[in-house]
Length: 92
Image (cartoon, rainbow, N blue to C red; front, side, top):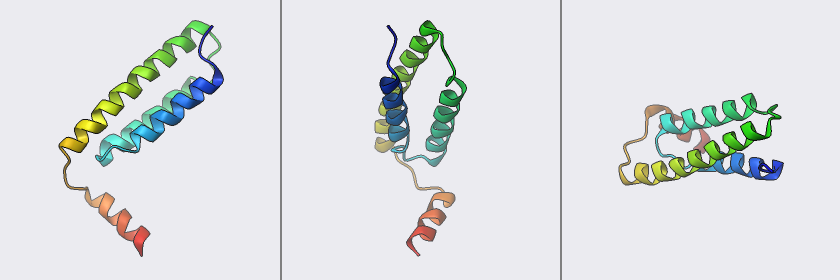
């Protein structure tokens, strides 16, 4: 038996949540777009084996994102201009 619907939704939420922790704007936005795209594209999968493969790939991706977030925190850079402007607009 493959992963349940709740397990898949939990994986989606975890991927989104971890991706939002990325300090780098470019990596963060790419990861969020990629995750949403992949889940939308595979939403209608019915083949049990394909669902299992996608779920396994998602777990591996989640693990990789967690590692990259930690590395990104160790070697952080200055925020991009697009990030500083959006922060200024929300504080005014």
